[in-house]
View 1 (spheres, rainbow, N blue to C red):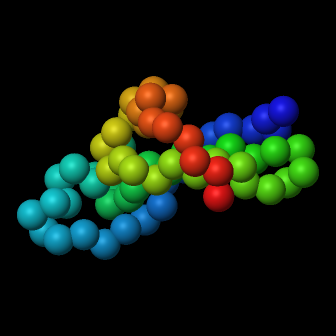
View 2: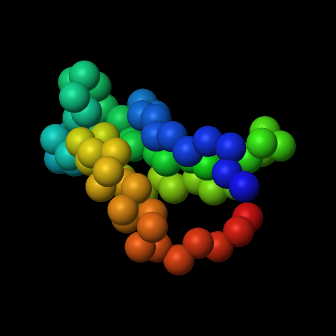
Length: 71
């Protein structure tokens, strides 16, 4: 069972040439991260593969299309 699934933005530092992609809607540089936490309060899945300008739905669909390997 899944307890919660949510996305968050983690602040990042990137090269000037890459900054445009990492600008989020609040005009800061970030990476969009999706996390799944179980009722046991442990992370069961973390997907950190998208720049801050990506929408949450884009990150979710990308995670669903990616083969999941447990850690």
